[in-house]
Length: 106
Image (cartoon, rainbow, N blue to C red):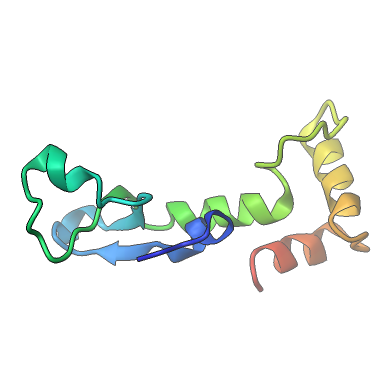
């Protein structure tokens, strides 16, 4: 599995080994070097991932689309001011609802 960093949060898959926990799995970078560490050099396939509760990646992906994970100064000293500035920076949406719907893929 090869996933670009910008697409990572949109690439989670359900993890059904423990159905009662309702988990999802995010792939972790290149796992080939770990074959030596784990003593499984002859493995044909290997997958490393991070487990999170289902929905975590979707929520963080919306935050990313909104700009909340960007390393920028929003200039807001409250959530509504910061979100308003991000809304304008991300395309000048007319209202917060259209900004949120667009960022969430709705």
